[in-house]
Length: 114
Picture 1 (cartoon, rainbow, N blue to C red):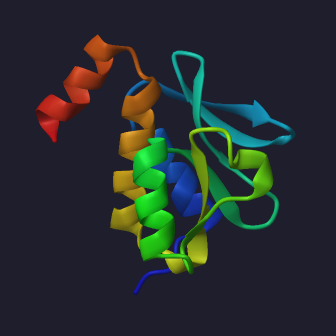
Picture 2 (cartoon, helix red, strand yellow; picture 1 turned 90 degrees about the vertical axis):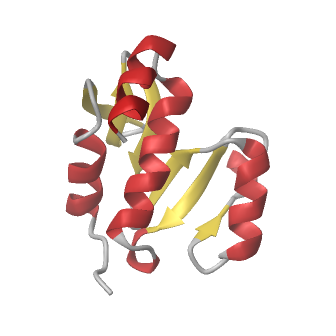
């Protein structure tokens, strides 16, 4: 299985429509129309926006891949261990995260091409 590197994660995020890379707490962060949906962290994990109900399912199913720290507990985010997920899985997670924050009309364009 291909290990996802931070560079690959960046490429996957930047492939989503109108995504811009900036900085958040001094680390690379990805936004659509100014709204944050993912960021790379110093420890080799990626914080990804996620529906809170879905997050619990993912974390329980794959605690080796997905986890939540106390800081993120009350926010719609989870942490992804990049070395433990595949590129397609990360692509799916980032597309969902992007769609959570993108304007509805823009989000519809991605869903139409999926």
